[in-house]
Length: 320
Ligand SMILES: Cc1cc2nc3c(=O)[nH]c(=O)nc-3n(C[C@H](O)[C@H](O)[C@H](O)COP(=O)(O)OP(=O)(O)OC[C@H]3O[C@@H](n4cnc5c(N)ncnc54)[C@H](O)[C@@H]3O)c2cc1C
Image (cartoon, rainbow, N blue to C red; front, side, top):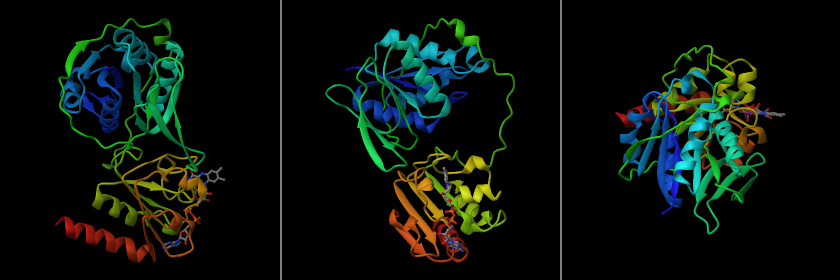
């Protein structure tokens, strides 16, 4: 069976969820071979094996932390030369998309970004994308070289499938460009204790209807009862009620969680563009004519200041 390279996103050996999702998708098109780089790369093996990696290629060097993405591209290129994979899968983060684009250029391949699904095809893997503000769903395949595909978080369920996960050292020679852009400082973001917005399985968002920064506590309380991330509409972030980094939509972040709860959000096309592929959508809005109700699975016509706290209490009570 053909091997499929999966680029591993990890923090000091702790594998992040989108990589485990990639392993599920990789198994549909071949045998997953994971590529883990940097500090803690060897510590990723157990989790990767548990989720289907037949092999884990590892390499650690200071360059991965000290410089931007090019050392990682060098390593993936070396892995491609070693394995001759049927495809290379990379998580759709900002770094991931840059790595994928640079790798595709290096190896003379086509690249597909922001896939939301992946299936085997007669002439290579077929990727599904959600495009034009989620108005269309397209299917494409790379017609030249080894397909390099980035996949959005939450596009597949994480499915354990124990495999050998044999660790092998990858031999990497860094290119001249690898040390072209040095990282000069790092400042950790203040942690909210909540999951990262684009990776969260549940997102609870607030819009103009929340009517003030202080009222976002209601949205946060619901999010915390569900272990969710907090998102916001552009109207809410432009009003200064919530940070711009939490904006969901065309000019904000694209999320595709299992559950998206929108409160006090009208459902403008630019907001929908960032959340329309969510699996289950719930909205609370006092206007029964609000466009958000066109795409919801469950809708509550009501005042969010009454509905949301009740929902939070009910969830807490059920969790015991
Ligand atoms: C180029 C461009 C890019 C854009 N990018 C984005 C983007 O990335 N993300 C984004 O979100 N927007 C974006 N927008 C803005 C977008 O068009 C809308 O203006 C915005 O999404 C509206 O935000 P909202 O739904 O919170 O506010 P509104 O449209 O004002 O809706 C507020 C809703 O809250 C309801 N409401 C009010 N009070 C309550 C209450 N007490 N209880 C329950 N419901 C209540 C109202 O009925 C209403 O439906 C963009 C616009 C442009 C032109």
